[in-house]
Structure formats: structure tokens, C-alpha cells
Length: 396
Picture (tube, rainbow, N blue to C red):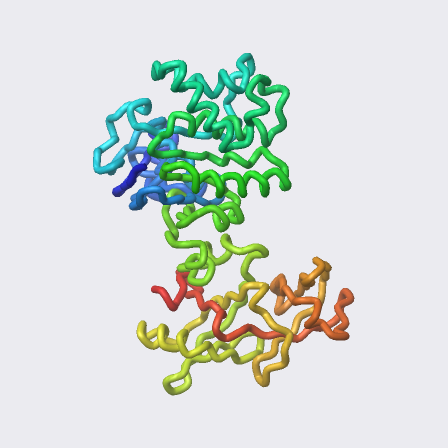
């Protein structure tokens, strides 16, 4: 069990050659290149990362490839040096503590099992390094194998196991010595969709049975939403938002978070935010949407001025029900029958849009390619973003 504190963590990879080339060309060394900031010291992979993790909390780092999430995890593990900032585990500063002395275990993407050893030998290996007595070692290995359902595979070698079974062994090797902190770096990315679903369920059950604090890295937002107590969303080495799955889904702080979280992703449209007396109105695709009263209150509280905005609406929050003055129109490109619902792909005002409609609500609507569909946004779940900064106007 452990609390973890990351304070103003920064990771810079020296890149002398790039810096010299930029200086010769007279370019600004602080200008962003390849989405990462370049300074005189080098490439900033992680910038000013701050996070407090509670004891036994399950925190997920999520973001696109190259956003710095795995680098941050490796700094916690001690596999990467921290350029600036401080890492504390249970109140003890860990910057200069060797990885083996941090009481941390890590599960890697590629399993990293020893092919010449049996499953039992793989599980025993970290305990042998710690010189755990034989009887205690057997007890801990048997308990870990039972938790993960791999008891029957203890005498097999990794090559005789499926991908999901190998990943269970890798997790077992991590938990067998009961670490304070368990780190997982995209452990399910090599599995097929069905196995990923099964292993997600296994990890959810696992965290209830062991007393470790979890940090889990993934680029899959579905994994992040289903596993995490809190999610840390990263982009270009910087934290975009930290919150519970419900918070980041319902209250995204900017367009990036809104588009990254949710499947299918949020639809975006150019619009205008107008003010009529004390009431705000959204003008989008020729329709007028009046945000709900709680949204009106947040806009008034921040004294938001009329402006050009990007309007966001999740596919499941768009309705085909007729509402006077609030209807927009799109042309059907594709319709996908998903059983209980249908995914309608539209071209609306030059924007690709997706609407998810329960099949019971379809009636006799024509959804053939090229047909016209009228739709509107639910006023309590419409999102308004500053078109220039991308920030959510309700949470600036």
C-alpha cells in the first residue's frame, strides 16, 4: 500500500544535434517540433506533471502515442531519470533511489517472461532474488497463481501458453512479492479484442484482492474508462485533464479531451454563441439551441462574451425528435445496424457526424444513402468551446 506524489515532474532528452541545426537556421529553440517542445536543453517529453495518488487508488495515464505517458511511468519505476521535480512514495523522496529499492513491480507490454523457465520458475524468480525462504516462496506463488487462475499452468513453459495466459503469468510475477506499487505499461495491447475484454475484467477483480496502488498506461480510452478510479489525459507531454471517468466524459476541459474520450468520438460544428438579454443562445447549422439553465449559469458566472465557438455533441446525445427552431439537417452517408441501436453517419454542413439512435425510436424513417435526416442536440449536454483556444467555455 502506498501514496504517490509527483510534483512538477519534467523529463528532457538532450538533443544537441537538433538544437545546433535549429540555431544555424535561426529558428526559435522553444518552437514546437513534432508536437513536442524543443528548448536549449533538448526535447521536453514530459512537462510540469503534477499528481497526488491515494493509497490503493487505480490511476490510468491515457493519451495518443508519444504523449509522454510511458515516460512518466518509467520515471516512477526508476527506469528513467527525472530531469526536474520530485517523486515521493509514502512521503519518501525517490528521485535518487534505485529501482530495486522502491518496492515497485512492473508489467510490460511484451510479457518479458523467461522462455526456458516454467511458469512456477518465472513466478519464483523475483522471490529468489530477495532470498525468500522456500516454504514462503511456494506459498506466495501458489496464492498468486490461484488469484489469477493459472494454477494448472505452473509446470508449463511460456511457449505452451496463449497470449492471455502469458499476460496473467507476467502479472503474477509482478504481484507475487506483494509490492506497494504496481505499474502496468499497455499490458493488453498485444491481445485480440475478446482477450482484452476478458483481461480487463481480470484486472478489475485483481485490484480488489491485492493491497497495491496501481498506475496503468494505455492509449485505449475504453480501458481507461473501465479500469480507472481517475484518469490522467495527456497530450504532447502535458496533462490536459485529471478526473474520474464520468467527469472527463461529461465535463471535458478542452476540445482534445472531448474528442479523445468517448466512442464514437464527439461531433464538432462551427457555431456562434449569442446573448439575448440575460440568456445565451447557440447558433449552429441554421438552428438555435438554448443551453440548459445550469449551463447558462456557468456562462454567466464567467461573464462569457458572444463569440465564434466550436459546438460539441456526443453521438448518443443527439436526437431526431422534432423541436421548433432547433432542427438541423444532414445527408446520410452510411447507416450501421448495431442491434439495439443504429449508427447514422451524416454529412451536416460539411462536417462528418455520427448519431446513435435506439432502433425503437427510428419509426419509418428513410435512412438510405443520400436521404435527409433532421436532428438536434439535447440542450443539457451540448458543449461550447472557444474556437481559438479550444477551451470549454463552462470551465475556463
